[in-house]
Structure formats: C-alpha cells, structure tokens
Amino acid sequence: MIEQLRNIAVFTSLSDDSLHEISKHIEYVKYKKGTIIIHADKIEPYFYVLEKGIARAYCDGENQQITFWFGQSGNVLFSFNSYINNRPGYENVELLENSTLIRIRLNDLFLLYKDNLEITNWGRKIAEQELIATERRLIDRAFKGAAERYQEFIDQSPELIKRVALKHIASYLGVTQVTLSRIRATCK
Amino acid sequence: MIEQLRNIAVFTSLSDDSLHEISKHIEYVKYKKGTIIIHADKIEPYFYVLEKGIARAYCDGENQQITFWFGQSGNVLFSFNSYINNRPGYENVELLENSTLIRIRLNDLFLLYKDNLEITNWGRKIAEQELIATERRLIDRAFKGAAERYQEFIDQSPELIKRVALKHIASYLGVTQVTLSRIRATCK
DNA sequence: TTTATTTTTTAACATTTGTAAAATGTTGCC
DNA sequence: GGCAACATTTTACAAATGTTAAAAAATAAA
Image (cartoon, protein in one colour):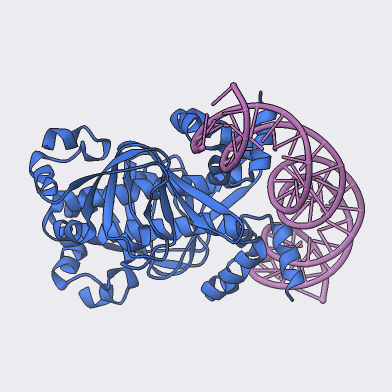
C-alpha cells in the first residue's frame, strides 16, 4: 500500500511513517469521464489525489465557463474554499477522462495536521507550490501576449494539449476560443 | 514583547508559547519610503511582517513595471521564490511609505517549521490565504470588466486608493494607466 | 513662493480581442 | 453508412483597450 502511494508524485517526499498514517484514512475511487467531483456552492468534504486521468476546475458565468486549473496524474485536487476556509467553494471540478483517484476526508486530514509535523509541512508545501504557480500565471498575463502564453502552454503541458478540448485551454489562457483559433492559424 | 506581536494581524492566532519562540528570532527594522527591501534575482534571506506602512511587489518588464501585490499593516512580505524554493526571486518589493517592519531570517523560520507544529500550521495558513486571494484575482479578470474590478478595489481597499499612486493600481488591475483614467472619468 | 519633477488626464489613432453566426470538422452511436 | 451532437475554424463587424504624445494637475524641492 505504501509502495503504491510512493509512486504518486505528491507523496514521494513523505516518510514511511507518514505514508502509513495517511494510508489508514485513504480510499480509492474510480469515476467516468464527465463526472463532476467538486461542486460549486457546496462544502466538499474530500481531498483528492489524481492517480490516473485529467481534471479541470472551472467557474460558471452567465454565458461562459472559465477553466482556471488543470490537474494531471499525481496532482492534488480539492475545493479551495472548503479546504482553506471550511466554506462552500466557487469552483467545479470535472474529470475529463475516466480516472482513478485517492481521497481522504478533510476532517481526517486536519486531524493529521494537528498531530503530525511532517504531514503539516507537506500540506504547507502543497499550498506554497500552488501559490507560486498561480502568481506566475497572473504575472504572465501582464507581460506576455496570448500567442506567447499558448506557446508556453504547449511546451510545458504537451500532454494536456493532446487530451483537452481547445475551448477549455482557451479560457485557461484567458482568451476566447475564437482568439485561440486565430493564434493557432497564425503559427501554423 | 509578546503583547506587541499579538497586536499585529498575522500573529493573533498564535499561542503565547509560539509567539515566545518567534520573538527570540525577530528584529525590528525601519525604512524610508522608496526603499526596495526585496530584490528580483536575489535570494532574499528575510521573512517580513509589515507593522506600519504600505508596500507593493512588482516585476520589471522592458518598458513597464507590473505591480501584482499590495501589502498593508499586518501583512507578511517575502520573496516568494526565496521562501518557497530557495531560489532567486522574480519580484521587487518597494515600500511606498516610511515603514516599520519585523523580520525573521528564513533559516530561523525554517528551523521553527521543523520543530513547532503550531507555527508550521500558521505558515501553512499564510500560504493558503495568499493562494485563495491570488486565484480569486485570476478568476475575476475573466469574469469582470476593468471598471468593475476598479470599483471592487475601492470597496475592498479604501486605504490603498488614498495612499497609492494610480499608476500602480492600474497595473495591479491589469490595465494601462490611460484605461484606468478613462474608467475614473466615466463613473464620476 | 517659485521651480522642477512627477503624476494624472485627455486626445487621436492603431491594434487587439470579443461577439455572433455560419461553415467545416470530428466523434460516437444506431 | 448516416445521423446527431459537439468542437473548431472562419468571417464580418463591434467594442474595448493599447500606444503615443501632449496638456493639465498635483506634489516635492529649492
């Protein structure tokens, strides 16, 4: 069981002891493509790790959906506002492929944070890494044009380009699908 | 000393014991308006708490500076990449007023994270709160026009509007100063 | 106060991106 | 295959924002 966890990117830094603690509380689940596993306006009680599959987080607008996050194998996945503030979240998370996930109840995870220094530091680093990545994107939007952001997305996430619908990538990059089409037509 | 720390927003949640641990390592410093206390491309060894004053974080571009963060009394302030990845940072932080700050060496803070569960959880929550705020801004840029973002900035940060140059606020909102001027002219 | 410096506003024009709708391409299913 | 549903591209036009430059206003310095 512990060996199985250690194969997953986000768990590699943890000691056997901590992995053992975590393994007492986890559960494997399997969902089909299209399943919404996190719902906006709900307190979602689970913290997930995506073992296999792809996911996107998005917000619903009046006549659009904005995708602002993609997850791949080894990434963690949770309702930000449920996890951080114990309040209903603002985002939905949809699985874009048939996926397998590991999950742990937030309550159980918080109990581990209360007792286990290593796991708490692990949780701290997860938040920090997400933070720095999110801030980078905010800055990139100011300095780089949409075409350049698209090119970097291809370079950094070649898997996603192949497997994710362009309309989702367009909103992730902060442009409409029409604009993304124009960009793609230009650099061909 | 501990009472003094407890008056600062970011420390209010900590126990006397933890504040006492922290107080062993802190130092009060005072800088003039215009001082750059965090430099891009350097590993900056301090974690600061702004006791009094206002600060902004910005990146330098070819012919522009982009401000992407403001700090007020009680906020924490550090080179993201130094703190998180022990690498030179991408941002400068400038004090916009004469300010007093508390600082602690990152090395000392990391030692506390290694031993003290409460302080580690405090560090985790700092990252989480920054994360959720940054993500909100990213989403807001997709859903809200520049005029609406400006109005919300006024509502949520009335202090900053009074005390910060509009050119900095413009880039924080993701528009040019010319556009911000037009927005201000319209809603007058 | 007077001058110098910086910040903010205004103007004219160029560019980018958005909107809406149609055309084309793709996928999956009966 | 052929239909239905969905995804992507293309087109024409509209709206928003950027660029550049200059004037006006505000602030700081002498």
